[in-house]
Length: 243
Image (cartoon, rainbow, N blue to C red; front, side, top):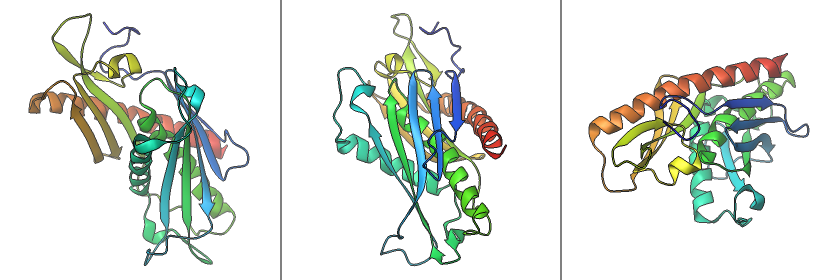
């Protein structure tokens, strides 16, 4: 039995509240258990100089000092920069960048993901909530006449999975959506990003040695199961945003 009473294939209680930041073009507060991330999406003044065609989507990720115990640092450091690159790649996978062109030329959108409370899964929550903020921003650009249509390919969401020994035993079990208490002792830590029915990125590490192909298959099955539920939560949030 998991410490919080969940089944191995059960997500933490997850909500996405759209329009959380009124000043942003698009925004959402995503909550997964005790992890909470504010995601905003806004236009950047210009696209990267090296970009030859189409628009661009990128991301920044940070964690408030009080989001962890003990207090963290405002400097994202190497880990934060690696996470924001993952978030940016994941959100770009949701968009047809070739169609991210407005009446005055190519558009660049930046998604900021700010962790206000961390209890594991901050990068996956950032991707899941960042997608909702991004879609809201694109829809507003359509409403403003800047874009003809929102160039979304398919929803993108992410979730963590891992192999964890429960109850002080040695045998590990595949678990979905790890809080910090499980993530910190996991024998295998996996983060999976999905777009629709396909996988965008898999980040996996054998923290305590190696893991087998059957174990990987079990974890990927769990991740697919979790992402399908997250797609439904995203869709419900976007319906609220449209109301």
